[in-house]
Length: 304
Image (tube, rainbow, N blue to C red; front, side, top):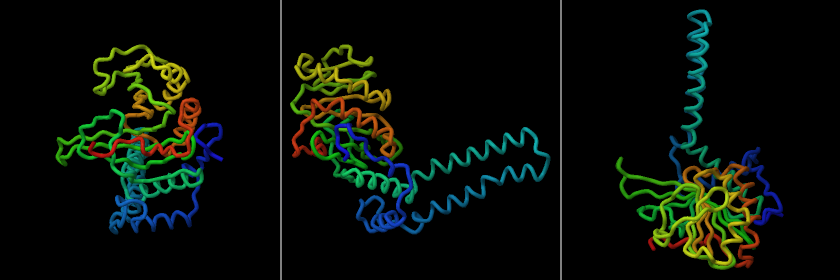
């Protein structure tokens, strides 16, 4: 079927294709009841209806200016340009505003849940709050993992989004968002960081001088001569990881290998999963193959 090695493609149709209406209505009802996390549970009437209300408002607003211009005068080039600009900006505002509404957020979770179901994966929309073993910031008062999907079995791994926010709710508060994939290596490696940009370094690598790595990256390692490190970096995994963007970095902490990307992590993109399949295939010779490995445990307990 679908495994973590990348030699069989995952079925990504649930991420973008048509979905079962019956399953969607059932999932939405379960979300309201709190069976798929607390964040979207028991929404108010306003939260459940604001998507439809917003669509009606924008549906009326989009043709309003063009009709007014063409009714009051001849369709000049200026009127046509103004109408196109108004319609485009209105539709863009609808697209961006709907992402934070209740119904689209539930539907996004439903697509991920269906993707995990048909591929034999585990999906948890709100997993427990733990701090990443990899170096992200470490100074946040609040940490949240979202939309974690675990690929089970030998050479399995976990993929999720990670958010850290400061304790204050005022304007001076800060937050960081990352996406990550974590793999379990068959043996421990020294602390190592591979990146194209100069990142904030963990304490163990503060005094380490970087060396040139594959695909134009720099490598900081506490044990650059470790026998597993050279073959791993030469496996093509760094080149495959470039497909996630320039901000992606690879970090090794013991037996845990992280791929971390700053900012938006497109979990519902088939391209992301194809890239993850290629990364898993490149890493296959170096991964732990025991069935008891749980990649979701490659996290440091919260507060440590």
